[in-house]
Image (cartoon, rainbow, N blue to C red; front, side):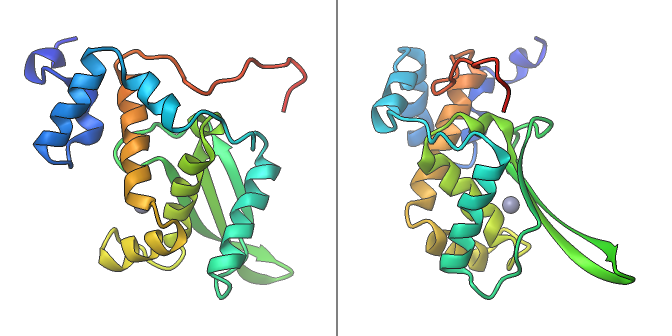
Length: 185
Ligand SMILES: [Zn+2]
């Protein structure tokens, strides 16, 4: 691709906000073909929450445990149309729907379908991010404080999620993918 001429390591774009030393370490792991094994060693298992119903229950449990004052979520689902770039690992939307002649706010969280097959820790980080947006719209200090409250390892996990995206971008296998049974979800 022509863009390769401008950016010698396009795979590292998910890590562009991190210090150069860290980017170099990631590049070393990637170039020596060890990044996938490194991630699997840290997170050997997938979470197994493969349906939207299971994802909804998981998200509502975390919301009720940590943000009891927030509104109930109407929908939480995996979305195969989310293209994972920059911050878009998931999306949260507020909309309004007429219900019984009145306008009612609808709260929805969509998680990139890629994370249907991922470790629980990765899912927890992304869910924490989207739940935090129920209270904080911007990616500011208050927002990240809330993310860390919801998931204490938030920053480490975000880095590991970005390392996984880097691994995939470089043509690596989906590390936690399961073979479809054919029965459908
Ligand atoms: Zn966000």
